[in-house]
Length: 275
Image 1 (cartoon, helix red, strand yellow):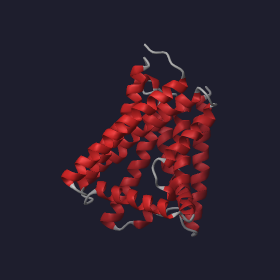
Image 2: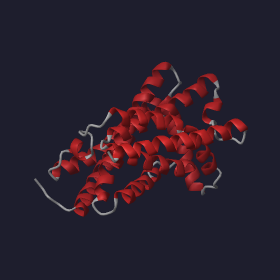
Image 3: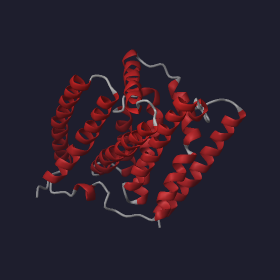
Image 4: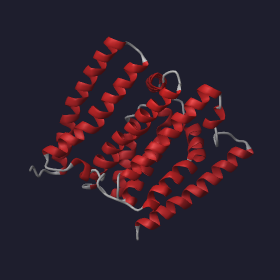
């Protein structure tokens, strides 16, 4: 067993990340050469990225330092059912308020390189969704919904938040990780709302005592986004992405209700954590 300081643990993690990131890039190049720009290619690249960049470096680091990966990140901890119920309710009720924040964030002018990164990310997402068939929906839920939620929470709220908590207060660690979480997505028109979501996931994991609540929250958020995309593309229900984003009476009311109910549910979440 290796007992090393958090700083050395971070350095070891970055070494593993560099190696496995290189492997992920090589795999992506091979896949692109073999399959070109296609839905299958995009899905394979996402699969390798989620595992090789988000999960495996953490697992390798913890195994080398004598830690148990799933226990370290909080996946072995149990929590009360009420936390999971509150998690789902919060993720549903926060949508109008978050849509309003997304709308405001999108109004900020972006440098050309940020706009280019945004377009590339959207193109990749569209490829992953395929032809918006029922099969494509199931695959998208598994890839964008579960795998992305699990792998990202494994790294950000599971590993990095705990690692930074050894040096900073938990509140600071949660917000620092939320900033990193948002930045690495390279989708800057949604930078602020993604920071807020990242912090929300962090507090849910902290208050409930298990990473599974953060995974659940992330999963629900991603599945709602996937469902909205599919309903828009298949049936033209564009209003699903605009609830709370306008200035109509309905939108303003929806945002107010969203803020009040979400705050009440979060307050309940925090009170339960103190018991």
